[in-house]
Length: 493
Ligand SMILES: [Cu+2]
Image 1: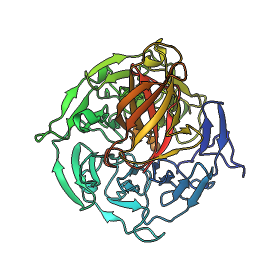
Image 2: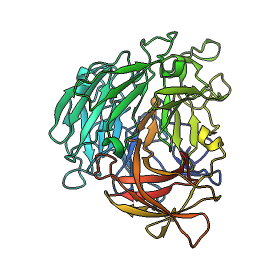
Image 3: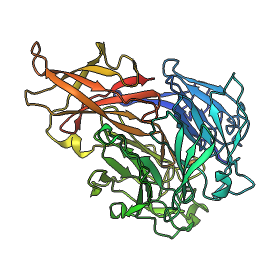
Image 4: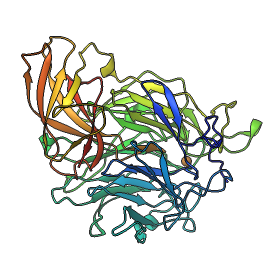
């Protein structure tokens, strides 16, 4: 039995809050109302902008069982709506992903907390929400790939692959096996060569779809970093990434040294300029709780990887960044923020709150400032999109739209504008489910002679939902690769 969490922050009913809304601008936190156990669950955004969250654990008497619970968070409603026990099967450590049709897929997991998964606990199925006809879940779809890839088949890596037929074409990797799966016809299209070394839980690596650009017809490459060869406490973590070009007729993993730092449980964040920062994690061991107590504690991951590395997908070059002083291992997170920074939090390698210990339950948050923030390059300000002031709420936009953006600059220097649209996804256990970066075509940028340092930009959104799925996204405008002070929130459909 795991205690969901004995946080100091309480819900209105006096229970520890296991969900909260944090306002970066005001540094304030608001507890949210969750009554079911979310421990080791998953989430994803529907095309209508609602966050769907499912799975978890059970056994904590303060919370209802979470493994079959579906939870919905609509930012305009402001709190969770829970459907306890709605789903047909139990899922702990499932993966979720937004789909081309605005729905979400919920894949795999085990029926309860395990270290390595096993056939008895395995849930080798997936389910799609919302269901086809009504409010009742469709039957789970049997998926033998999740049996074939036991035991390292939890938090499977999933990405939508761009295509011109509007298909739900999924890249997935479980254990060491990658495949291309056509969800619409339930067929495996391609079986890729195995990647060297275990990459999925508990030898956890991280996976991302590299930035997609219209200039090369959204050429799709996945990159899978870190992990651990051995399910072994003292083993050095994996210092390699594999990069796979999915458009290559004879695809092969191109391996590198991951910037020279071995890392299990890395977090991977695509920045507003398309560079990637890898951070957090450990240089030895694997994902999981410590063993033993007090003087006999044995940490299953150790030697925290304090230095982020910055990776440029175009040049394939890594740069080592200044270290944090905070160990962030099992149960850490990192995400891009709308102002172009990286928000970093978490670490809790124990079954409940423990603070007076070498690797404590970590309540401190950090902001990582990418190099682009530290330059003197003027940062644009997006004032409006199609005449609507930004960040009142999500501005509705559609595929293939030409958008008119009014952008102001702080100085009279001649700017060089580019733009991107980013889905931030849902982050847990080193997986950023649905994270996506797509470069946008800037058709024109004309000086607005009526107002000093103001420009009118025309930009074109991607042509179809396989490039970036429907849902809530951020549009960034950059000047010489330095992002705007605040991205514009849109709802793409
Ligand atoms: Cu966990």
